[in-house]
Image (cartoon, rainbow, N blue to C red; front, side):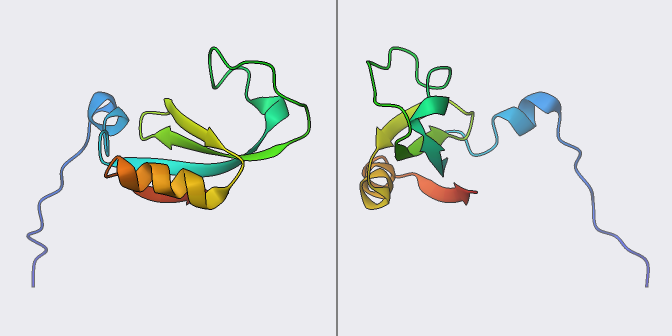
Length: 85
C-alpha cells in the first residue's frame, strides 16, 4: 500500500511563530542567569533558584519564586505550558 500522506515543510518564520500566543515554557532558572533574559530587572540577590515563564518566541512573561505561581500566571493568560529542564 503506497504512503499517500502529504508532508509540509515549515519555513524558519513559521517555526519561529509556532505556538505563539498559546504555548509558553516554564523553566527553573538561577538569578545569576536572568540579566540578559529579563530586561529592566531590578537588583536581585545572586544564587536564587526561580521559575521563569517564557512565550513560545522566547520572550519573558513572568518570574516567580514558586513554580505553582508561574503556572497560575500561564493559566490566567490561557497559555498551555511545557517544561524545559
